[in-house]
Length: 171
Image (cartoon, rainbow, N blue to C red; front, side):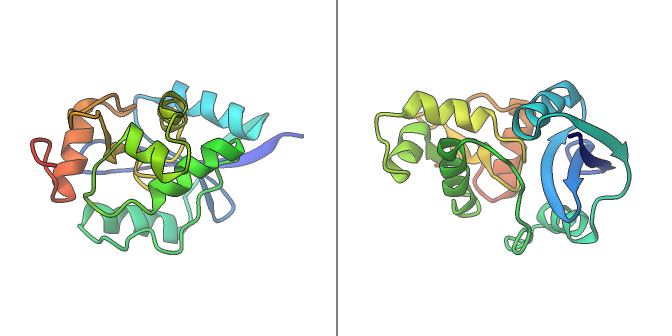
């Protein structure tokens, strides 16, 4: 069975974002230019799908607008529909409770989910996060505090951390 998804593009201060929804649920959010990555993640997490253009639900669009406006409660009440593995879901749930502007290393995140030796697996799960910003994978940094990979690009990651009041040079 083919899953019907809706794709919407919104402007942000750091480039357009693609929001993919199923009904009221957010399935993916990624910056423009990474559509192939989004499609691969959607296929992995949702199987066969058809992506049709259309407006994302108002709550989702407003949540992103509020986030970029500086509202730390912007995503309250918006639940992602990620369909990851149980391990991935545990990593993403831990990311969701990471406070605005807080930075964690991969090892700190692994410890947070009770799997301190699973640092590499945590990194892989973080990299397969289909919902940028709402699941704040940009808050994960190297053990020494350095900025590490980010699907939307390191410049955006630095901007997002700075936006949250925790610039790229602070910890």
